[in-house]
Each structure stands twice: as C-alpha cells, then as structure tokens.
Length: 357
Image (tube, rainbow, N blue to C red):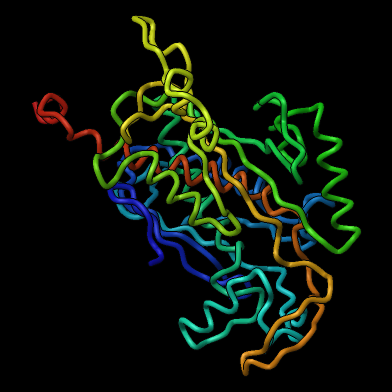
C-alpha cells in the first residue's frame, strides 16, 4: 500500500535514486488558498545538507505542483506534486549491490519482492518522506483556516532528555531542540557518534493545539490509533506514545485520570484523546526514532546468496535521523487531523443540515 487516509487521501511515488519522488493528494476542498512558498518552506525544513548534524547529500527539494490548483486556489480535484532528485551518487552503493545492510529494509524487501534496488534502499529510503511533507504542508494550510496548530521539536537525543518544551525555541534550533539548556549536550552527542562512524537515536515531541472535541471514529479508526499508525509508518520509528504514554502503566488510576471542571480538564495525562476521540485538550505525541542504521563501522551480514561477509558502508547519511524526522511527524499529524475533520462533518444530522439547508 502506498496510500494513507480516507476523506483526505494521499499516495506517494518514487525512489531515493530515481528520477523523482512525488505525491497525489485527493480530497482537498475547493477554494483553499495554496501558498506555494509555504509548502516550499516546509520542505526546506526537512531537506538534507543544511548542517553537520545531517547527511551531506544536498537536494534542493524544489516542489512543483502539476494539478489541482488554479489561480492560487485548490480546485477540489487531486493535487499532484513532484520533487526531482538532483544529487544522487548511486556509485556510493555499488559495494552493497549484493549485500544486506544490517538494520535496513534490504533483507525484508528482497525476500518479499525478489527484487533489489540497492541505490540507497530505493522505495524504502527516507527520501520518500519529502513527498509526505509536501502533502502535509497542504493539510497544514487547511488547519490554519481553523486555527489548529501542529508543531514539534526534539525532546531527546542519545538519552539526553529535555526538561522543558519550548516550541518557539525549537523553530530556531538547527536540531529543532525543545530545551535550549540541553541543546549543546545533544549536539555534542550527535557529533561524537558521527566522529566514531556511528549514529544516535532521538525522540520527536509533537503538539497539536486547537483541535475540537469529537475527532476520531470508534471503534476501528480511533484518533490515537491512526496517529500511531501514521508515525509508526515512518522510517526508523520504533515506538509512539500518546500523552503520558508508558508512564501511564506505572501510575495509579487516581494519578492518571484527568479531573474535569466546568472550565475544562485539570490535567492532560491522556494527551487530548479519550476513547479514541479528541477531548478538546492539546494532543501530545512522543515519537521514538532508532539510531540511523547507516553507519560506517565494519559489520557482519550476508549476501543475497546467503554468504557471510564483513563490510563497511560508504555514502552520506544522517547521524541522527530524528532531527529531520520531526518535520515529517508534523506533516503526518496534520494529514491525520485534516482527514478526521472531514470525516467528522457528517457525524450528526445537525452538521449535515447546516451544510445542505
């Protein structure tokens, strides 16, 4: 499957070292102002090669809208966008043509499909996430019309945890750090791993504000379930927490419940979701990324002929994939919320009547 969503549905195409990657976004209501500069700015946040904390691969990630927009507004028809690959170095992967990279999808893709695109992993490469960011930027434009804000930052790198969550500071940080006091230590951990030809993991914290009560479709399309699905579908993500997450399993019910008063909830351990439905509080997710599997240490593996070999990887890779990954988390969260908003419009007769009468 290469598609996601129900009412607002997007599909992506392309490979890491192919001609281009792109997306087809269907279900955008007609009349939405499409700010191309904003879409490009979102891609610029994710694009590689901006600093020593990212891969050295430099891609302009220039997006081109092919359809679905006329005179700056959506037409209600599918919006197609394409991003051409301009800086492939496929020869960097020639030494792994017949070798499975530990920690990568090479092994499983080959055994599933019987075909191997060894050039950066082909379709399994995180390069595909640029297309998700393009689609997510349009979803964000939809949410802005409803005063819903999606933002994120890095709250942990190599086990160094943020003690505060400053989303404004994250916007100006080269590693999107949420805690300015921990940023230097987090940067140092990334560079130390890079110098040692290794990598580190990290955690993205996503906050969604302004979400109305009632988003989420019980029982099999719950808001938290779909958000978790969206995040777990990203490269290198190994765990997702909603609200207090795993901490909830360590507390008493009296500690974990969120008391309610006329003015609203007194706490937000639930992360803004109850019974799979938004409760009006801010939605909070923690998305855990494993260390980038592309490291430059010699490793044990096998070939496509099941022969044991030792090999060292070449190429250009992120020492901490969570940094650029946090931008993709935002995009996916925006797409989920926008889809849920469209689904929720027909949940009551009052809503249907309001439109048709």
